[in-house]
Image 1 (cartoon, one colour):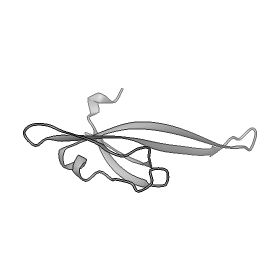
Image 2: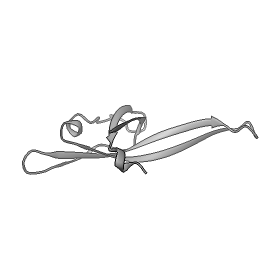
Image 3: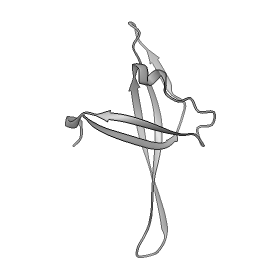
Image 4: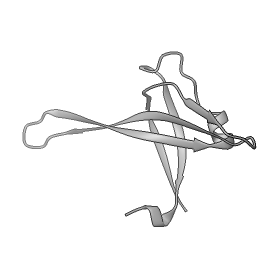
Length: 86
């Protein structure tokens, strides 16, 4: 498995879904930013990408609940199977 670490701002609260048998999943949006300087214009450019994060079971239970989603920053380690990367 490959591992990915995303550092970003939470876009909304974690939406939890519980299933019979005790399993659960949590879903939330996470925004990541890339900032660079355009060599031709000297202008500073910022690009924002949104990621829809889904975590299961124990990881879902410890997912953050921000007091203010606009200022909360969190770190998540997401495991992605090698065959899922294209």
